[in-house]
Amino acid sequence: PEDSIYTELRLDEQLFNSDTSWHEAIYKFIPRIDPVDGDPTCDNFTDTLIVPIRVNPTPAIRVIATDSVLCNGIDAAEINIRNPNEFVYGQWVYELEVIPDDPLYLSGYRDGDTSLTDSMIIDYPVNSDTVVHSLIYRFRPKRSYDGLLCGGGNDTSIVFWVNPTPEI
Image (cartoon, rainbow, N blue to C red; front, side):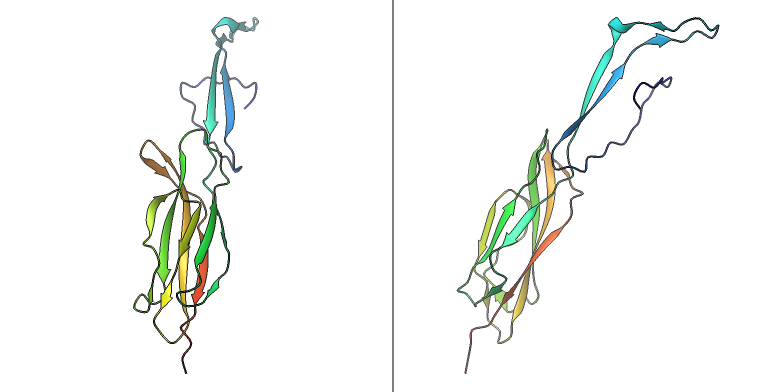
């Protein structure tokens, strides 16, 4: 709190940043003695300690599919991926999970990964069945810093419907 008198030896606060950019909280410590006899407070402004704390945003992701209904083996499952975050420390990454509704009949899609930075995904799914099948791409944004992954961002999913090859 601004202009408060703090007498404890430890300060614990949970800082939250709901924006897409990093923000800074500045803590200013001024040593002082507040006499119990009612005399004026003794301040020492020359020993003021200023501590800036930078708070990264919660990782976020924006994904857009060019089309969600695909012709078998011809149309691309194309996804544009955008990072809306600005981090003070660390690199934005995302985890990708690809979930076919029936892996026996769907192929031509990539395996999932845990630390991607690609801004575009293009796969050519193939449906060997005679009925339509779905293929879900689930994205989980994260922030990587010194080998640690910080999550907490909202999952985003894109569903593609892969039509079979028409038969008579």
